Image 1: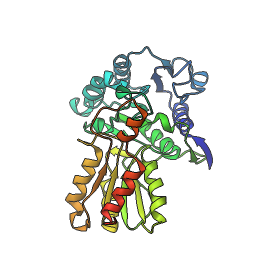
Image 2: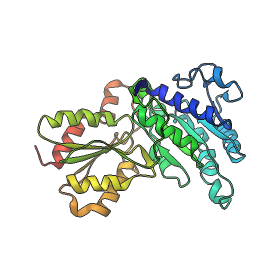
Image 3: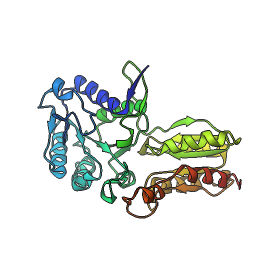
Length: 326
C-alpha cells in the first residue's frame, strides 16, 4: 500500500484509464496548462497532449454538450466542473441529453461519460458556491451518482465510473483534495452501488457520505469512551443506493442517524429514512434522526456558516437521543 492525497487518487485513476484506452479524454476549465484548479490533473497535459487534456472556455453548457455528443459517438469523456455549482449552467445537457439518450434511443446509444468536480461547502464562498447537488442528480433516472470520502474509494470508484457505459456524476470536495489515505500499489476497481461499513458497532447506525462523514468518526470516538458503539456506513454511491447494507445494520443496532451536508427537503437522508421505515420498521427502537444543513442558502459569515453546517455536537446529541440518554 502507498499513501497519497485525494487529488492524487483522482489523477492516478484518470491517467491509468487514459493509458489503457485512447478514446478517453479530459475536458474542463484549467485542467491542462494549470494542472487543474485543484491540481487533480497535474502532469496529464505533458503525458497525454492537448488533444486529450483540453482546456475549455468558461462555458459549462458548451463543453458539457460537446462531451455528451462525443460520448454518443464512441469516445469516453471525463468532464471536470471547477465546482458543481457551475454545473447548473450545464444541467440541461446532463439531465435532458446524457441521462436520457439510452432510453430515448431504445438502447441503441450509450453515453459513457463522467462529470466530476467538487461539491458542497468549502468555507467562506457564499450561497452560490456552497451547494450540495447530490440529491438533485440522484433524482434523475439514467445517471449514477458517486460521492467518495477517501482516496482509496475515490480511485477505485473513479476507475469504475470511467469504464461504465452510462453517465456518471462523480462528486468530490475542495476540502478533501489534500486528505491522505492508503491505496494499493497495483490496479484495483470498486463496484458502483455498494456501501462500505467503515466502522462496525452494535448500538446505533450512522449513515453518511462525502466529507461530512468525518464528523461521524469524531463522534464515534467520543461516544466509544462513554460505552456507546457506533456503526458507520459510508454510502459512497447515492444512485444506486445500497439499501440492503443499511437495513441489515439497522436490524442489528435498532437505531439510525443520517448525516448529510445538504438541505433537508428531498435529501438522501429522507430517502434512507423512508426505505428503512418501509423495510425495517419493526426493528427500530427509536425514531430515526436526520442531521442536515439548515434550510437556507449558505451564509458567508464564518459564525453563521458554523451554525448552518452539521456539527459534531449535533451528531453526539442525535446518537444520545436515539439511545434515550440525556
